Length: 219
Image (cartoon, rainbow, N blue to C red; front, side, top):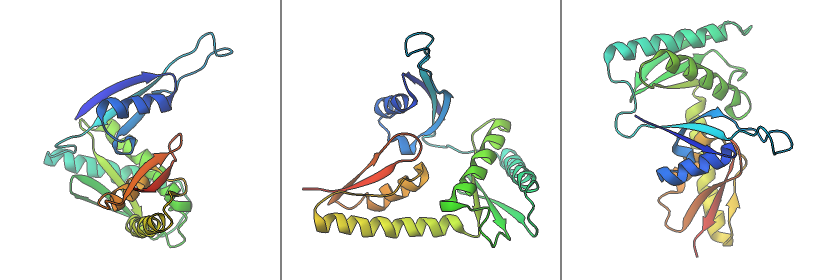
């Protein structure tokens, strides 16, 4: 695991700087905002640059030690159960498993989809919080995936099919097409789905966490 820090006038500029210097798309970087930056009074006095931390896991990004694995699994499951305990829903249980170097927590019993939210945003928020709790307690970084009613796989399949259809449309009309605003995880699925199509290229466009993917036909 390698850790880098970057500084610029804005968070977006710091991320662009990190992407340029590390030669890596921002969608593939684990980014933590240390200081969002401030323009100061009238943009002249007391301004502070934005600072970000980027974690790169090149070979063995996840915990291999058996004790650490079990500990991470327990912390993750208990953290999610405590959060869900604050929500007035009956019949909700959490199952946990570890595979391919990551922890997957599956919420069972959410038939209404309340814990998934619009386009998985509630699920993403739960996942973000649990990851923060787990990695604050661990010596090494662990990836925690929070799922409910197999939403992650269904979402992935939907995005892949959407990407393929939009790619065909871009080639047919000879003009770029763009997706709706997507989070980094969903954008990565779009990029990977079209990566091997020699007649297309994809680029993320926008500012902040949510961006669009531009699907561009090659001349």
